[in-house]
Length: 144
Image 1 (tube, helix red, strand yellow):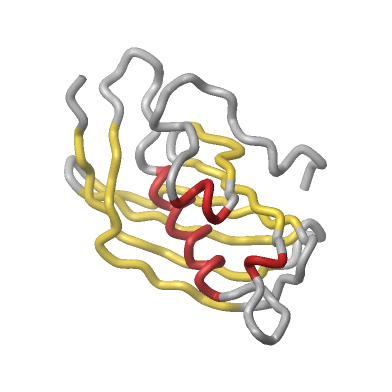
Image 2: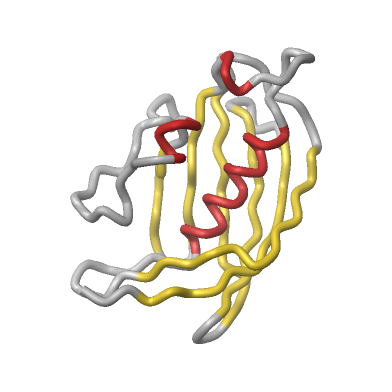
């Protein structure tokens, strides 16, 4: 994973920017293109559970966020899309400790006009898989 993996994508589009829950958790959209999204996070003390490892809710958030973004990419000038989660399955494979950088990489695996399906893997900076997941998402088309 490159050293700049926790730097957000720079874009003036409000769909790509931070706010609310993203700011609270501290994740960043690293890469966003057709059918692919990468979300990064550096594990902080606030992300740990009482055993001193990353809380499963943080992993779930990374998977949900990356999967949701991967099906919603639109080029500039096209009506933007958003989606909400219909179902999400998460697999907790490893642990992450404070200071570790994580990258959630999601890809769209299919869908149609109203739904899409996505798969995600979350890896630490050494390439070790920490978790994986898959979800079903429903599009919401925004009007500007």
